[in-house]
Structures are given as C-alpha cells and as structure tokens.
Image (cartoon, rainbow, N blue to C red; front, side, top):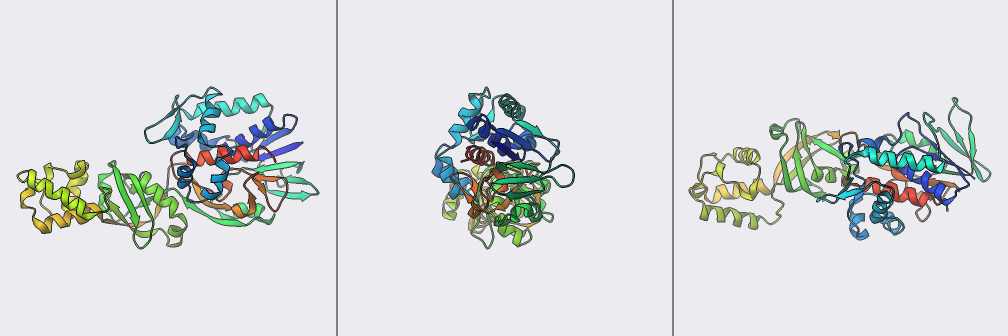
Length: 403
C-alpha cells in the first residue's frame, strides 16, 4: 500500500507515524511544500512548544474550541490529552504541566518535540520529500493521483492524508473544493487588538491577571489575563475573545468597542461594597497609594486620571459620585479597536474544509474515498494553551489508522 501525507507539520507527522505503525508494510511518504519541517512546532510557545493542555475532562476540553468542539468530543474518546502526554513521555520527551495547565517539555525547548518526531519517522522508514507542494488530487478508480504541477510527475497512491494546515485564503483550498468538499471561508483567529487612538498603550507591558472582556453590542465574552501592548491589548483573555469572535469580527472589519472589566466581577454592588470598605477603613489614605484589587500601580493611576479623580485626593473625600465613577471604570472601561495584529508567528485560521464533508470516526472524506484529513486544514481551531496541537495529534492519530 502506498500512502501520501501532504504536509510536514504536527498533524502530518503524527498521521504518517501512525499510518506506518498501523500498516508496517505500507510505503508512507510525507510531502512538504517548503524546506522546513514542523515549522509551527518550532515557534510554538515562544520556542518552547506548548505540546498539549493538562485538562483531562473531555467535556471541559471541548469548550476551548470555538469551531469543531462537538466533533472533537467524539475524537477525544479515541486519543485525548493523557494519551498525548503518555505518547511523548514514553519516547523520552518528559513533560511538565504549568499552573495555567499548559504542557511543555521539561527541556523548555521545541527541539525536543521535533527531534522525537524526526527520530520516530526515520526509525519507521517514512520517506520525507521537501519542496514538494501538492497542486491537485484526482480520483483514478480506487486510487488517488497526487499532482505537483509541472515540476514533478504525478504519483498514484492508495491512500492520501491531507494535513496542510490552515490556509489564509480561500484560493488555497480550491484543489480540495474541486473534489466536491464543502469549504468554510478562512478568516484569522487568535489575534491581538490594535488601539491606535487609545492612550492606554502607554502602559505597555502591564499584565492584569483576572479580567473579563466583552465586545460591545454582541454576546462575546472571555476572561483571563490581559496584556497591554504598544499597539493595544493582547493576552489570553483578548486572544480567546478573538477566537470565538473570529468570523463576526472579520465581518465588521475589525472595528468595534471592547469593554474591559479590570476586576472580573460582574456585580457592581460587590465592587461598590469593596470601595466602601476601603473608605471606612482607610479614609485618610490618598487614592494613588491604596489600590483596590491590587491592580498594577501604573494602571490604577491611569484609571484615576481617566475618571478625573485627583491622585492626591483622600479615600474619605471620594463621596458617592466619585465611588460610582470608579465602579463604572473598574467594571466597564471602554476602548476603541481599529484593526488586528496576528499573534506572534502562530498563525491560526477559522475555516477550512467543512466538518460536514468528513467522517470523524475515521477522518475520511465523505465525498472522496481513501482521502483523509488531519489538523487545521479542517474547520477546527482552538484558543491558546496547547489546544490546537491536541486537535492535530488526535486527528492525525485517527487518520493514521486509514480505516
């Protein structure tokens, strides 16, 4: 049996490795269009590679996927986060689960993961061809003809796994649409918010650990740490919001207002009670020197100026009007967003081959027998935290059965 795996990334390697493990006599070839293998693995997590997430409850795990969660629920029963950890650990890549549940190699280097995959592929006798971009797939009886354009001669395969990753443009998926697969238009997911007209950028580098962010006029909400950058806002809360709002934010041209709750408390009465407690116990302290919710000092001073309250004013002099002003700013601070910036080199797309075109029990195409899918080429994407890699490992593992 001849098996072609298109794409030399995480999903492609995992599918190829398991195709060879499941079918030892098969000839398995990985075709990668660039010169680089496992490129996204290399840059992930700032070069440390966030292999997976420590969440073991499938019901909780699927909540991290704005698209594809329902289908992955079924797939995770076959290969989930503990399976990933066991797979790498058993091959000498020791892992550590951080406080935020992100899982990294103990070495804190993505090279450990890359070396593991390369050694595994080499040991199994998988052939790897770089600079071999696939341009087309045609059905020839029960076989599939893989075409490379004019540069190389087409090859006939028994089975093909497509693991080409996310395509930033719809045109990059035309060759799969030509086989009658339904395509969901790709748009960016996981991006940071640009705020060209907002002075909050002067606070770049500040992280607020517990925030709640939402997009005005929508039901989109996310919580978690928020990072202020020199162009606007980033951090897990913003990235989560961008992932769940990917399609809607694309439709409105990335121009909207974001509401920031700096204290992650939705009940204003609770926040007012906290401020009244400070007024009662620390009435002589000046506003600038006593920070509610242990907010970063620079942010607290910025919020006081924004609410037009003098930094030297004493808490006891705040009054009802001043307290209400602060409550409003702490729980509903509004910023104008105009544009986005892709999050580091970790480009993630919402969209791809529609899950309606795929049988998730095997990852086989419903419209083209012997063609399988793995990874982000499908309309699956997760938030940051190792979730995108986990869906790559899971779908690659199932596709590798070639069932």
